[in-house]
Length: 236
Image 1 (spheres, rainbow, N blue to C red):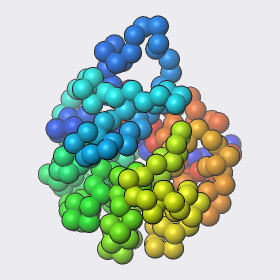
Image 2: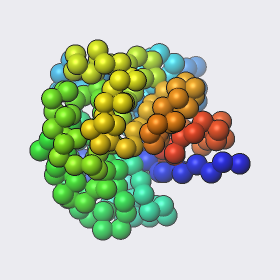
Image 3: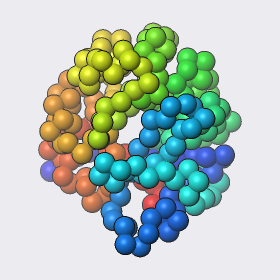
Image 4: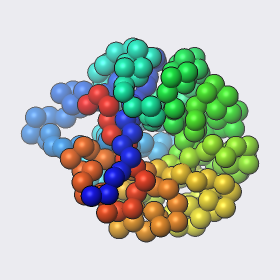
């Protein structure tokens, strides 16, 4: 059996950990087994929506969520030393949870996703995050180059579950293969690749450290994929 690094993952909104409220978002007839959330690309920052993904459909739940509780207290209760945080405020308001990162990073190694501008990414790292995770859908190419040149503590999140998209024409035109190779050449060593295609994970895992989202019952299927680790919901 091949050992896979399992990292807990959480969503943080306004200082609280949130999970989707399926009772509000889905009818009883449509309930199925859902993967971890994906990010729906929007035309404007103010219109950004946090979604769960079912097949090729995106279901927004930034208004249909349950508060699990205060983030700092709950994250400190997680036994693992390293975890992934999706900072919803950083995505929708360009306001990362700086105080939260400062507090939790005293005890945990944090991979924090949400910031896509150099100034915000810098603040996230200076506040104590081990890695700032940049989503290729929401970052412009020139900004990504600046971010990668600023620090080697950058991870790139590439979402290609249904469609490979980006607000940046340059990133869209590169395609996934070239984007990952180019980012690697700029110093990025770890990638989050969100896809249901395990062969794609295996392909990229030959050249870079690949992490992906998975449910607990999907981990066994990934044992021979070559991925370095999986991100699993901590409170769902």
